[in-house]
Amino acid sequence: SLPNSRDAALLARAQRVVPNGVWGHMATRAIGPGYPQFFARSEGCRVWDVDGNGYIDFMCAWGPNVLGYHHPDVDAAAMAQLKDADIGNGPTEAMVELAELLTETVDHADWAMFQKNGTDATTACVTIARAATGRRKILVARGAYHGAVPWCSPSLVGVTAEDRAHLITFDFNDTASLDQAVAAAGNDLAGILLAAFRHDVGRDQELPDAAFLQHARAVCDRTGAALIVDEVRAGFRLDVRGSWAPYGVKPDLAAYSKAIANGWPLAAVAGSERMREGAGKIFVTGSFWYGAAAMAAGVKTIEILRDSDALAHTEAMGLRFREGLDAAARQHGFRLRQTGPAQMPMVLFDGDKELQIANAFCSAALRHGVYMHPKHNLFLCAAHQPADIDRALEGAEEAMKEIAALGLQPA
Ligand code: PMP
Image (cartoon, rainbow, N blue to C red):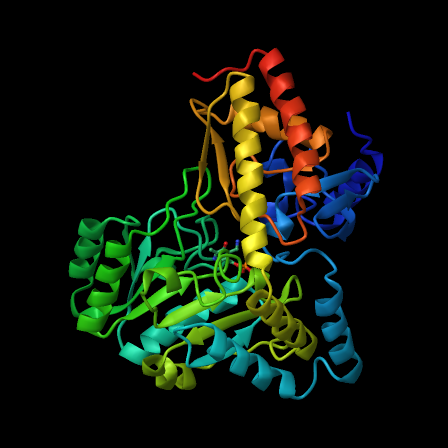
């Protein structure tokens, strides 16, 4: 097993001064046995925990790492801006540059506004949709994650029914259920909020159905409601023009964060002309939202993603990983269900109802230096090279062998 004495000591210290020690989805008690909680270093596609154990990383900070940790050009751009001005009495030129670049790059965007976290951006989109339409109802897909404030948090603890009073749910990719929700909203429909693709925790991922997206677009055109895409997880990992560009469907509002500045703290709302006035009417701000270093990092990240083969490379690495995992699983009597884009795959075991196999596999993979997640989609980045994938596959194969030897088999 892995040495983890510093990790255990830090967690004990944290538990005295932070409720539960660590909060939210990165609390490893919610992931599985053996996961280190505290990290000391990261580089490229690798992370090291505080006990010095190194891992080939397939979580990529849960999305922000798209080009590799410590990408030299991105970090240089941010550090240069940091030396001049970062947080101040207003924005710097970097905000204008970033908005210009974003509107040139994202196919539906005529304007942009910036925030820090994904939740800031999704919440702003909902507020803008209501401001633009003067209506209240927002349609959201069952099981989708859009952030961690009362209107959208997956937990109801500390949340009131009133916080959710104007949400109506439907099922992703299900046109009939969307139509029911639209009917229930009546003439109070402000917006339809959809993830870029279905990436709910613990279930097979689903790409959007072109006909479903077109239908949602048509509903919004007919009613004047806003079509909102939550690009927080998928944005700038699949397609710099926007994740729906290949489908030819343009949203009115898109929420970005995570990968947009390769790990520097930044979020964005990108909107179309018909939402500009509503966006100009709402009051949104934050002490750090005009931070210029993250914006400079965003400019450099988007330029690199636009001008290089980083995303195509990442997809190729994802496919190599997918094929290797599949072969390793079969060799040891398991069947995987690998769904969604190869750059952000969901890897589940067939017949693994309680996730026992996935938990055992991920813990074993961890001991062989491969950091995965048993029920959340994984992330690849442009720093993954064939040798890293192959090394990770060796670890994964050892892990498959070990769980087969434990007698863990599909139900
Ligand atoms: N939407 C989606 C699809 C996400 O994956 C996330 C973060 N996991 C969020 C919104 C919220 O982003 P943040 O945690 O940065 O507030």
